[in-house]
Length: 377
Image (cartoon, rainbow, N blue to C red; front, side, top):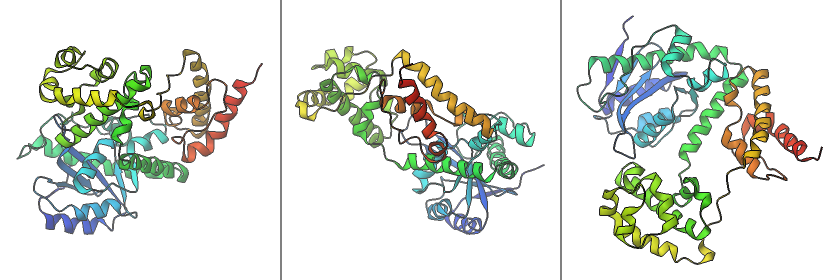
């Protein structure tokens, strides 16, 4: 059946449609974008489905996004997306707003135990028994005019996403529906949380192997790289490659020749920013001990794997009881943060990342399990 496609190419038309969508119970939302040589995604198309029609919004001809921002923020209209972390970045960059409430159909599928991290085509096949044509994901969404194949692909996405929501929503209990929205709100909150450039070093590979003096250098180099990537709108690896960060902090070169010899140091970086980097390293390396960052905790030892397994079993048992995908229950990072709070002797503290229904249902059981593990047999 042919899809009813409507183009929105100017500010007035967008304003009028957004005013109408404000009265709907939900809208399905998707984006197409390009992000090859940039830090920020460049929007190529915004698609909205209302359950009956597909609307294609051209971001290259619209510059007033306030009506869409207001729609995204309207708590009475559920915004339906699929596996939406990158879509959220596009919307935030374009409109300055993020969707609330947010219903992610990939999460909903996991709460219904249809599968974890399901691709969109597979979900559409599972729920609607439709075979989608192979995607246009790699095509150029900034070209104009868009090809007929691109237009059809984009419109189908919005149309079928609305249909998937209509099918999934009644299958979710009130609890599970609220959990999907809760997880959606967490995705939004994480994106709103501006990453502090001076905390980025803590996530760098092998940071735990460095002394506190070396960490002071790593902190400055990572912060500079993060800020430059944003300012130049370039991928981080185009500023300084990831694998060059640790040896930079470890060896602290003081001339261009030794800088150029660093493993994975791109000649372009040496040419463009070499002198600045050397000066940055010199300044950071001369900081006094009172200005050094705290040591980065070591990874958990191999022996802790058995404990992680026992903790994960609590989540799996709960997942079976609730009939939801076990991967939804306890994230690996959360379990590691819990163990690092007191390993090996305890006492342990529940990490901030374990929140909401997961904390209520499993928090005490996790602490009890660790307390039992610490008691002599």
